Image (tube, rainbow, N blue to C red; front, side, top):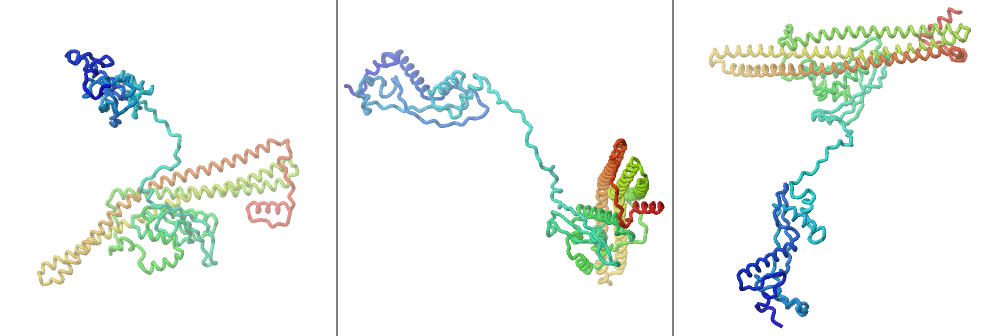
Length: 590
């Protein structure tokens, strides 16, 4: 047995797989070399799962993944340092059983595929088929599978995009509000439970004021206090003094006669509740300390007296005008210099006259409804009296049913009259009072104007005295220093008074715009409620009349209007209009 490690020409003579016949001949050697290289390339292609052929560029970059290096014997390599692999006797059983006698296999580095190019259509199809048949390692990125899916060698088409479908989930959230509105505290104030307290000389109505707020300035979110009418009046005057130029919602006016009647108490309660809610909704008034004292204080009377002792000069000099030491008020007639404010003043005068005329007409209509209600009650009493003396049941039954119908009509008229007052009348009265509050703001602006010009007059006097001292020389130096300080203080007051007048003008412009917006909303709501109540009242009357006519049409049935006899008792007569009318009829029949 010959040593396998020896250099011999046997390997060249026994080259398998279609190799060369001799190394010494030039052409034959080149052919053998080409065949060996072809065999190496074929072996490498079968061992590497991916190909290095050129690829078309892709839209998305591919990451280069390092593949594991495998060592594999190469057949028919005459260029190797150990000679051709066929020189080893393949039929030797000893060599196959003895691994120490096998020649070492030179390492072959596997070439990594380049991801910047795409393979041809044939190479991609062959690689994909080989993987499907289990002949190669799986591609973790499924490159060739993608190539198969998108066609043969052509440009890749974009994936289909599904059209947007409307969401089946409906949002139940409320519409979003601005940051300013979300940051504002909310107030919900109700005025209720009016009841009379006190003896004959000091009797008055007390109301329960319930407040629910999200403001952090209050100790609790929900609380309740007791207030009487004069407490609401104190709040209005305090807010006017603290906030010159702001239109403060006013309370209802006083009434000396009939102030304990149920209708008047209810209308006053509704007006007081609207006053508080509008005040709390105002961005400036809701921050006032007196409003907090009114809504929250359990010892309101004591706190008010303590406040008056600390601030004895309550009135027009209180607030910003008095804080600067500026005097207010003048006997001269004010002449408006701003055309915008002049036009608004003329408009407010005309609006006030129109609202007063409309309120007077509404009061007349309400009085007529009440008169109709009373007339319907008298008519019902007369029909009832006639049905009692009529012997025929076919006639007495319908008469008595008509009498009951007139009582229903009387109740409808009474209720409609009260609803007209509470829905539309209360809005008219409120805006008549609001116009008065706007005029008070105009008066405060006029006083600020007078204060500005008064301060200017004082400043001119101080400057005149200063000029006089300057002409006298340095002999009056101490007096000159004092007058100079007075002139500087007068100039400061003039500057502050002028800024206050200008700021009040800008504030009143925004307040009048707010007044117009709220007026439109309130009147629209009031008119709609007024019309709805009128329609409901007419529908109720129509329904009652139709029911009565259906009963008259069924005149063949004598039991339609049948009523069981009423056993007379010695019950004293009531004090209603119907009872009085029936009592008069009974006396006349006797």
